[in-house]
Length: 200
Image 1 (tube, one colour):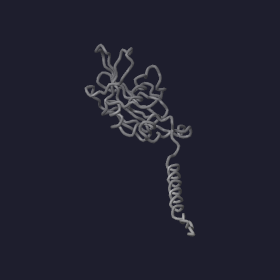
Image 2: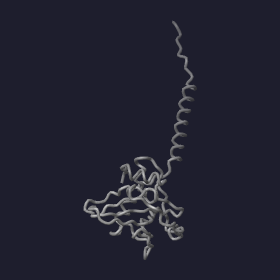
Image 3: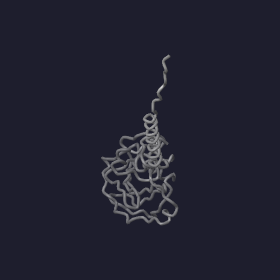
Image 4: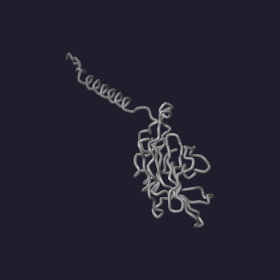
């Protein structure tokens, strides 16, 4: 009678490999959790482009904010205007001269916008600034009879004011991303000329 005996195969190697794989997986998950900070679902670009959310302005920061010295109105050229899309019922058409757009350290985006009648009437230009963080607009000067005239009452107003509908459209179409200016003037102009649909 043959004495058959089963010789156990050591499982140490297999156990060690499985344990090592489990540790690697746990470490990878831990790194992913640490690197993916909280996402701002209010940011319209985040879901589509994975861009970081724009900085938010706290009430304390808003109270401490002070506008920088306003530069003089820049020269503009009506032949290089980038049109602002407006509702069809508007009797005026608007465009902004991209060469006049600037962003200063206080976060204000300034520009020259030109308004003209669709029927080909008179043309007016305005030197203005927009605060993306607070959704406000301010008119500094108006171009009249070949020269800039300072605004009689320059003050910040809500951008959704009936008389500044074009400023609201301009901000949405190029100047602002959420409640912050876009990364550069070049990006603003690019967005106005070739709008990319953003998740709202």
